[in-house]
Amino acid sequence: MTGNSRYQKILLLSLGFFLLLILMAVFHENGILNAYHLEQEQLKMKHENESLQVLNEKFRQEINALKSDPYEIEKIAREKLNLIKPGDQVYNIVQTKKSSSSPK
Image (cartoon, rainbow, N blue to C red; front, top):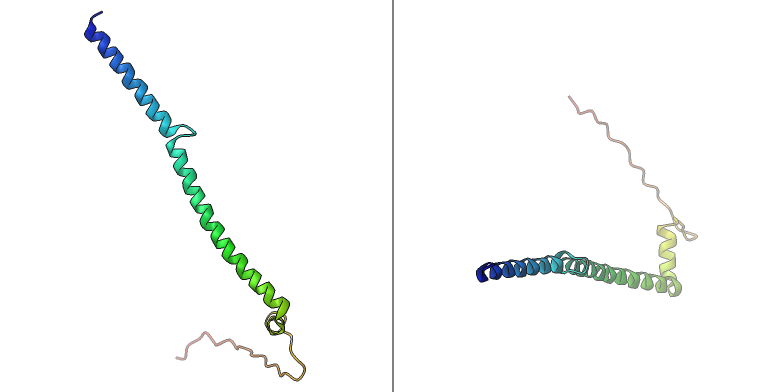
């Protein structure tokens, strides 16, 4: 076996090993690609968490208003439960259907 052939085999084995290490670093379950996907998922969850915190704060304010503000309770009773105060007049607006035929 010549020195040149031995050098080529060592070089090829080294390159193969190096290529295998690169593939493992990228595609392994703990590799760079998986780490990137996990980071993206973490960012998505952070944004979702922030939006849920804003929504929770809105609900907290609404709860506090319902506990302490009688006008807020009255507003909900009027709008959602269709309740009225004594002495209020209620008007029902009835929409009529327009005829679909056009004049000739």
